Image 1 (cartoon, one colour):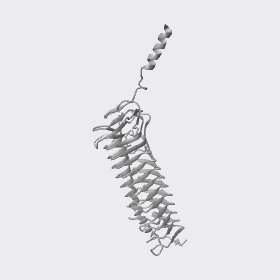
Image 2: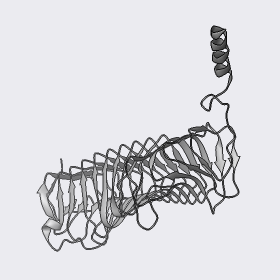
Image 3: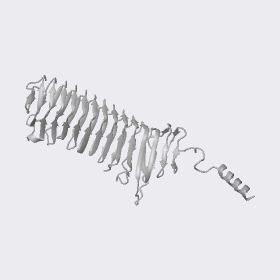
Image 4: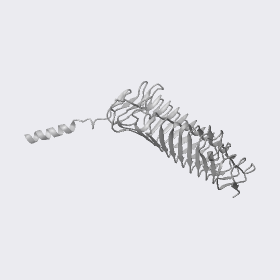
Length: 365
């Protein structure tokens, strides 16, 4: 009898479903998810979307979470680790943001976003932490995602350096990534037809192996800080890189092709341009205002541009330093750099304006 009771008890335990084995639960709007969840169908919310408790992963499973401009699609708790994967957020005022900022918040705070489309929103993701203070930002990694038709794809602000983006596409946004008094790292990503692909204000961004195609402005900086860009490709658009004030750029081993202006230096902005190729641009490199120093242009190859290197007269030679550049077949100037510090090794030939170089000595080959 005891053996029979044991068997019956065992069978009963196996037949009673547990929480882990229960079937899918329908997700409703304005709900806090406390366990890992898979969205089973498209969901449209007239008000708030979903909230994720610490540790929760949301798999959108190819579905779309649609909302209205005055609401947030997914809020993730500032504490713990969260993941959002495989689906679309559309129509929200803000696609993803954080919430819940207790004074004693500690421990791991991460957010991973993978294979998610953000479209037709004011802001796709705000990675800044608490609004107006920047407290408790989550270390955010965004991979293989797409931001399209938004006013701003990603906002990173309030002094944080917690954003990494890779293998992600920003297309047809007003601004793809906005870094405001903060910093970010972007690799292996595409910026297509945005008004501004990357905008940095009083912050810093590192960009590697990424493409900027037919943006009105590929990258823009102003105030202080700057962009460190390596092995990028800029194609088309009005301005490849636009620089203001003390916010400059370091551009290395990159290619700029077919832009109206390749690199545009304004209001004394600094720049280090080394080992790049500029081809078939209206103007490859131009300085609009009197330099304040920090401009170093070396070892670049320029071909078939309207103008090659055109700099304003330098009040002191070290403000503009030029050397090792090879400029050929520009319609206008090869190198125009009055008062610059000549680092030697410049080559210019078959450019439309004579002399081939001003301010530095150039050999024909």
